[in-house]
Length: 190
Image 1 (cartoon, helix red, strand yellow):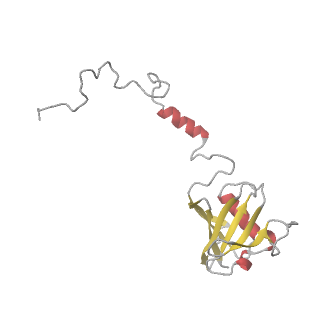
Image 2 (cartoon, helix red, strand yellow):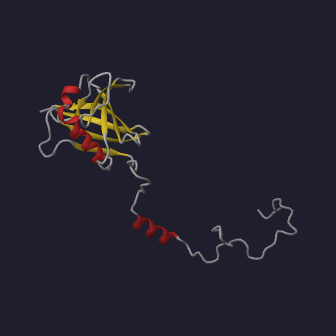
Image 3 (cartoon, helix red, strand yellow):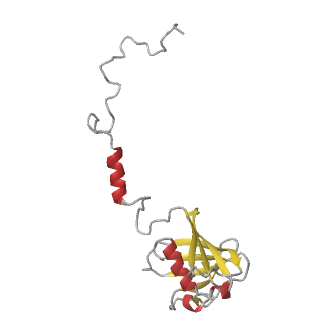
């Protein structure tokens, strides 16, 4: 069975993306879960996919569950809609919106099709990660808090002798600038 590879960009920074491989007979709900896992988001909020054109304009919506909101076109439901049924072009694009309050927006683009699946992988699967994923609920460090504290202590060079601003007394060994005209010294010894 063929495998589709989508690149999922974070709209705020296109250098942050995840490549996700998925089978055409799998659902948009499975793609939704794969995106959340790849970007380390929880699944507490609603989400939608939108078909898109090359200009990233929103088209028909694919929603997580049925609702009573009136739309121009009847939305599709994620669990009922297969990826293969929505791919109409070799570079098909979708917009993925997660958490309607925070408006996490990701641009999803078909970047490749493989003829055969890898039997060692369980699809959908994130096959490439680039960039640090945005933090869903605040700041996210490159390393955990314990490591950050450890590094801070390691590189915290002797705080004694420093003023409140963190400046040391280096160079203040009683030498006065009095008598100096501030110009260069005239050293003829070279």
